[in-house]
Amino acid sequence: MIVCHQYRFIFIKTQKTAGTSLEIALSGLCSPSDIVTPISRDDEEYRKSLGVQSPTNYFVPFKNYTRRDILNFILSNKRKQFYNHISCLELRQFLGAGIFDSYYKFCFERNPYDKLLSLFFHQGGYEKWGAVQRFIESGGLNIIKGFDQYTIDKIVAVDDIFKFEEMGKALEIISQKLKLDQSLELHPVKLKSEFRKNRTHYSLILNEVEKKLIDVIWARERELMGYKF
Image 1 (cartoon, rainbow, N blue to C red):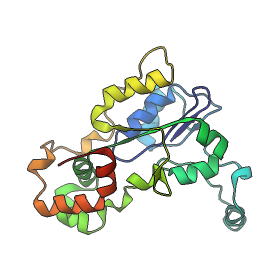
Image 2: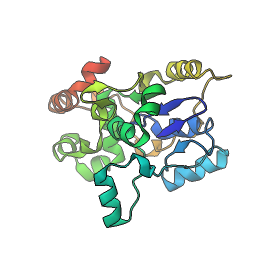
Image 3: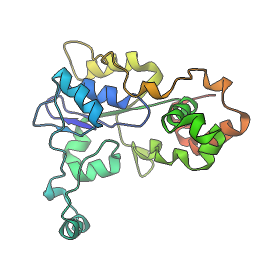
């Protein structure tokens, strides 16, 4: 997750949508006064090698704490943090309505059937689960926030939700809205891509039961973004 004050944007990092690659690219626009959340150790090493902004200011200011937050801090001595896949609801509370409402906010969504397979292979694939259906029925999709991440009270809380499948076009639009001198580009290293070796199209992998499970579990995302099998 990134909050950039110079360019007045907030990047909501969704899951399985090239979020880390996007975050690293956007880090090049940031300075030490912005909010940049930590990523994995290996990814941080790669970000550092590029010379772009590293994690900074990711502790939530005490002034934005609720009474419960203050009590929890007293009991645990642990600061609240902005984090990788923070929801808009949390972010608006921790950041403050003034900045959240006035900055340009965007995120990405992905074809749910393809997103399922990306997560499935990332979480062990056939070697661990034996079948995609078993993975789904075991609650494997619960880590994906999706619709609940970029909405507040079931209303979309970002200005743009771009499709992962239209990344090139999306980067051009984002660059124009931020009034950048040149278009954003993802760096050539495809982070986390080594987990998925099987690139067969999802329509040739998923059976009818698995498809129907996704139709129900991610119905809101499908309807909002117009995704079809």
